[in-house]
Amino acid sequence: MVMSKEVRGEKRREVFEMIKKAKRISLEELRASTNINYNTIRSAVISLTNAGLIERIERGIYKAK
Image 1: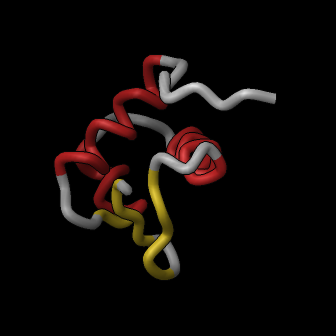
Image 2 (image 1 turned 90 degrees about the vertical axis):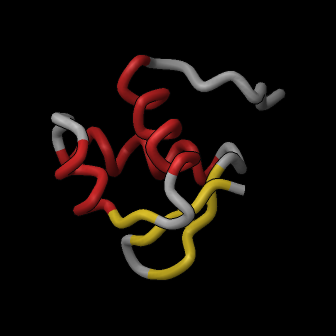
């Protein structure tokens, strides 16, 4: 399976852009700054981490690679 660098999905792309802008951001900060459901943010963050686009620094805190 080939992983492309393209981020699919409008909300997932929005979450990725927010993480790229911030040096590091928590899920709560993402939730407060966007109007996206927490579970949607979590699933987006998990798929972005698995795709290698972002990394988990500590519990609930992420940064772009």
